Length: 470
Image 1 (cartoon, rainbow, N blue to C red):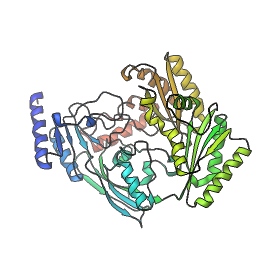
Image 2 (cartoon, rainbow, N blue to C red; image 1 turned 135 degrees about the vertical axis):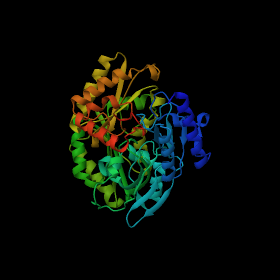
Image 3 (cartoon, rainbow, N blue to C red; image 1 turned 90 degrees about the vertical axis):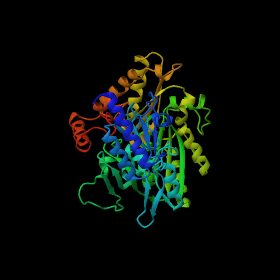
Image 4 (cartoon, rainbow, N blue to C red; image 1 turned 120 degrees about the vertical axis):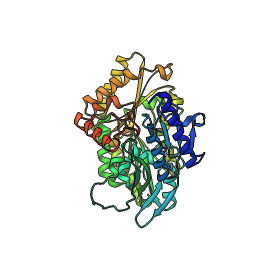
């Protein structure tokens, strides 16, 4: 079929879909909003042929049928807050956006579950759980923008993985539309269900390459009645590891976050970011420790006694303890200012890697040196969820726009070191297209081959989000 005939067929299929779903559900050509052309990565936006905005799984299936008939690749989209172009379209594709599939369908207090549509923002899910006296513990800086379906698609991590696990651990059931349009409804609420394969795990973390998640059953937990936080200054990374072990042993299940910031990060946020931290500069590392419990009168004194014991033992160089929830939020602002790095640092390249906890400081030292030596003028800073082995780093050359930042050279230096140290090129952000050339640094050929086999089995025509991940 020649190009003109294929364009005519595509246009006919999209307009037929528009007549079926309604003019608000199918936006074509110049009607396509700019937001649907890219995610939060700094890569070049691409405008899709159309954006389809269904209201339910049946509408998603209709959209898939139209795309398949016209042989148009299609990509699912949620909040578009990803960093790796996993939900970004290419020219000539159709975007299937879940932005109108929002709302809490049910909160079952007896089962401690929530059934929710996949386009619902994470913050809405958190608030609904809180209003019901329960907790949905997944928390990300993009909570107000990201969609819960996208959180599942990337198996999002966030601030409290050390206690609650990744998104995968918080999902009981889901509804998903397969690449051929088949709707699989498995809205399971059971904590125990070993009736055959647990199919939801095929789709959680698959970055929208195996199916389009449309509804989810989430696991809810008891709401914490107390929150304690301390910002600790440490002499060196050996002391950080000792603090982590002490937190696991002394706080046990109360430990909810363990965030580490290196001096370069601290210097940037105080000198350029305008942050007034609760402890002074000049220390080896800085650690935000958070604990959450069920009895404030007991938990707060236990947390205070635990810290005092560490101070007496000389493990902490300095520490500030939050005396209120407002101060706890202020402590978190020290860590969360990374969301404003575009203002603080200007154009920069961000990385999200996983490493064995005891080797993270070695990686920081070697990476910082390798970037500075290999790329003249390159600066880098380091911070992350070290309690679960997730390090973030940002690298840049001052004064250069993003398109002139030496990303390929940075990638090679950082990911080669990750491979050498047995780490992961993606701890929580996914692979998308921006990291797929580095997937083999963290996965074996046999693992990637099995991924391809699963993709071919579910999507033999390779129309659903093709070219992503591998």
